[in-house]
Image 1 (tube, each protein chain N blue to C red):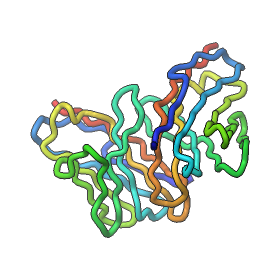
Image 2: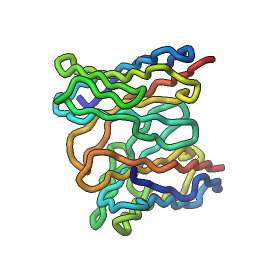
Image 3: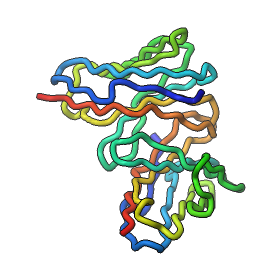
Length: 115
Length: 113
């Protein structure tokens, strides 16, 4: 199956700093990518849909100015958590469907800890 | 309604037994139903998926049963192994590349020796 990578796999930062997480589709092009966050022992919560060539679509309740998404190319989307606070600590996961297919391929996730 | 309800929340099965996880959806427009397996600290991985035009799909030890009239679908893991111990999520979406997945709440499966 197709492979999606994320970088970094984990990051620790101080409160008030910004953190960028990259999501790459390694062997296919993805015009759409999805960003999720997952708290311990909970399900995945969709944050936003990243669209190549246009603005991201955010789910209700997700702060656009706090979680900046940029779909830079057909293989790369980035999520920047701005002015991070301890409550932003979570597991962030991206996914990408291969064009023309329903199947979504998930990245390995990024563990963010804000001190 | 976009909810997908999943049960049980947790499940303990002996090695060699059958693990059964159930999901129910409300939106009749959903037409793609995948199951994902997630190990701690990892991203979800697609196990098996089904569309409403079939009532059952089998891949190895994993089987999805689908009941369109009841709006329910279930995952059966035959001959469960300790390596199957993970969290399982059902999901539902519409056909289409940009379709968002609606996830169930997850089932933590533990397979004991």
